[in-house]
Length: 287
Image (tube, rainbow, N blue to C red):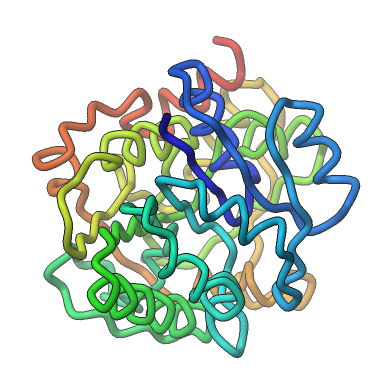
């Protein structure tokens, strides 16, 4: 039986896990709190609490039975928590052959609105991007040393049901951030699951894919289109330097680039369910 262990069984990993469960896979994973772990258990998963620091022998035992690992926990100042705490256990597990890592297109840095692809040398400009690149390199080194397949999936802004411009507008919390010349990338959570599923049987080695939709676009256009769909007023333009934005939100606007998904389509055979935000927001709005 195929057994997937998810470090961070949250929004993206959850969509993939529901698909794989329907195919007969066994799913285990971690949550940050006991309450979240209990919710995962009620959904039928084997769940554990992981705070990024403490090693749990029960997780070690679950890893010894796993065939695939998916990593969706962001790295901290000391590196990737799963590698730091459970790296020896993953290395020692003879059954684990495949490790997938949800990284970020922030590793490319700022291309001034030009296209980038997997051959573009990473040049992160934010702390978030630098940490992601360090984690990618650490897992790549780990895979080569231990004979594990490493698949790095670089993700842009993630949206989907419950986490979209439509949801923000309906809640009255949408911000239309405007920076002249800014272009950002996004992907629907269902398409992340499709790409990850397609990558599960890749051969050994280290492989990198951009998982993004077909249309890099100014972020203010996405909010404006959502408002048009819902027939509600478009929020006023907000400067990305606005102090009320979180540091993470502001970091998104430090970079402008167009990320190519050609390799994902050609080598993984992915057909996007939502090739642009137009199809994605229409579906979320129920139109």
